[in-house]
Image (cartoon, rainbow, N blue to C red; front, side, top):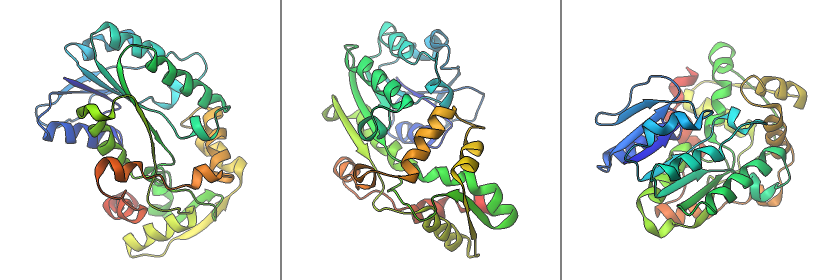
Length: 279
């Protein structure tokens, strides 16, 4: 049995589907009741209360661990989830971390995530760590303004990073859960090219077949919007990267190609597949 946390999100949903299609027994975990693929067991649980995961971990051999934003906040106990997994007899954990633990190891949220990586390594479990950079799906923050006004509002319009399609993260996660060759490895996951927010807006416009205006936000304006859905520290860390990426943060990693045997998908592909969100 493979347990997928965050199973209704941009990574968990395609991962759950891929594992089910591969014939694996899957338990999908989310905070709320949700539709899952046929044959997939669904358990409602809140990762902020690790003990509540016990029903989901019953008979589990592997766990995909994705932390929601509040589990990056001060006082959260994500290490407790690894403890519960070990106690339940889970053999392998694939952790979704972040590229920032390498490129900005002293940021508040990065220190906590690196500590969680260390906890996993020291747990005695088999492990793999995935460190993606920016997500293509973060463009969904703009969906409402694009639908209503044909406007994308974002900071740092002409500064780019190689954002990755969450479907590619899911494909790599599936490989790490199913293939022993990935045990004990940490992978840096990026898209195939550097793309700016302005360039993303252009790709969405092309998918829509309709022009979109780009409006550049100040950092303070962007932070105010982001902190509605994530801790302020995480918003600051993210804005630091978006506003002044290091050479390591604009580097295109070869890891997706090496693991999947194909290039990562460009942002334009993500925009075309998700264009309905912007109509």
